[in-house]
Amino acid sequence: MTQPQLDPLIGEVTKKAAVAWIDAAGAETALWCLWSEDALLAVCGPGEQDDPGFVDGSRCRVRMRGDHGGRVVGFTAVAQRIQPGTPLWEEAVPVLAAKRLNSPAGDTAARWASDNGVWRLVPDPVPDQAGESLPSESLAAEPRATTAARPVRKPFRLHRVKKR
Image (cartoon, rainbow, N blue to C red):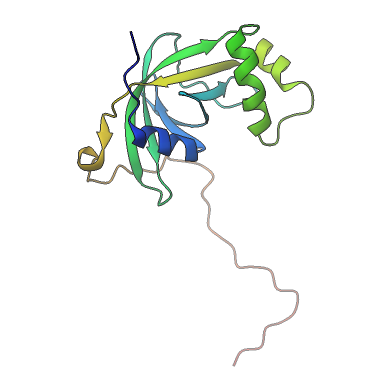
């Protein structure tokens, strides 16, 4: 039995994007990811990005944005954990590690095998949001309350500025 053909929009957007918004446990999280052949690859866990609640074999929602910053496509994907030592691990992890920016010193693949989860998100062939089915209202969230906000002081001037 052959797999259904993947929608070309999903393939093109995911190849170009470096970030995907993933909803695996009821809250959307931005994750750095990499498109490899027919799936998105992501690394989650200590020292990497937070795990959005992936469960092996479960379904999650994926939303991708375009160059203009707006949502272009949304689809459902199946999360599959890639186990260390498997042929899929040997194929995917070197590609993923090569694209990982600012990686801590040491063997990245060994650290991922012991401390982190490497996930493969296999998309459904047909998107659930694209074109006319994309939401037209603003999806912006209210800013979170923070104690970091404070009044801004005037900048320090070494010399007196002459008034005109």
